[in-house]
Length: 96
Figure 1 (tube, one colour):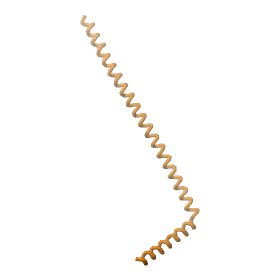
Figure 2 (cartoon, helix red, strand yellow):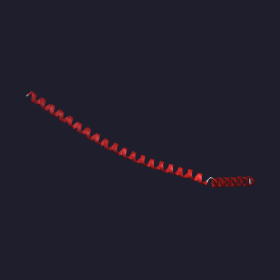
Figure 3 (cartoon, rainbow, N blue to C red):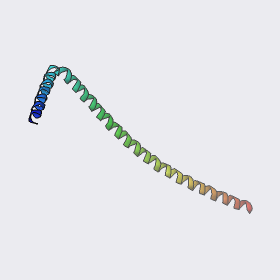
Figure 4 (spheres, rainbow, N blue to C red):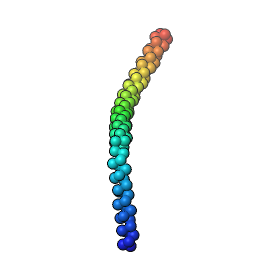
């Protein structure tokens, strides 16, 4: 058991040394790619925030239009009732 841990420790140390050497060797190139990745991540976050704002605005507009449609429907119902009353009154006058 102890030898396995020592072997794993050596393997891990060798792996870390390899990563350190590779990281030091391609520092400028890797940094460029990391910076580019961060830039794209920031752009994605900004786009997501804009999309969320647009969705909220669209939802608010939909609620406003629903309220306006309800008001228009009520006005149409009142106009229809008034037309029915006017027609009834006209029929009543024609009978006389």
